[in-house]
Length: 267
Image (cartoon, rainbow, N blue to C red; front, side, top):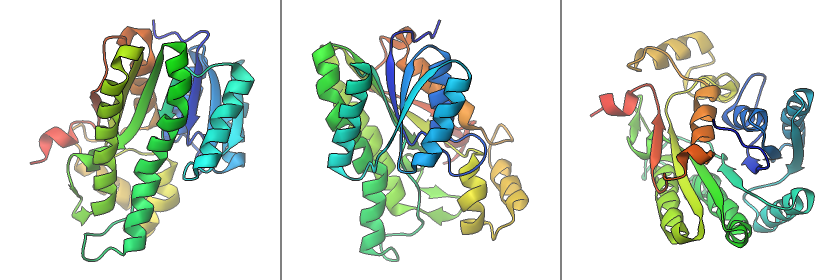
């Protein structure tokens, strides 16, 4: 079950911002372990190369490519490179994003635009340049990585207006794409991620909202989770694996929430 032999998977954001396992890195490695050939994309070539080396050390197949997912010609070139290397694209994981706090009054227009582009345009461009290949094949599976911020818009006392709007838009993009291509053998779903402990927490978030006190930030974040702990990148990766597998062949235009119960517990 959940095997992917002969499949080619494009994973965007396949690197990690620091030591450990980010969502893209774990997803790329898990898909490779299940038999997929992975094409790992990241804006930081070195980070993608680390993921590729891990996959190859385990006997898997991985090619990596430096790509700015905000630039259409870069995205098109990356997908063309994958097709040239592997001949097909069966799976696309849209896993690029990042948050910035602020409400509509306090946020600058530049931050708003940057957030929408980083969290939503990147997924749009990924779909745009993969869907023609999937349509020609008559099959494909796309998974977008969104956030519970797209469902619950006030997180830990902070407002993320643009991030929430973008992640809600990513969910809608997934549904619209799924229905547009449902007769063409292509499925599209979204994994909605909650409060996770990934390298991003220690590399960036702790300094943004925790004053640099990583232990205190982790304790605060875990206190608000019904399960009593944050999830990790492997929780996200296993949800992705299920959705791209043949076992999920009748599942499209929907979401799996991976959040330890947060979204159900919040009003």
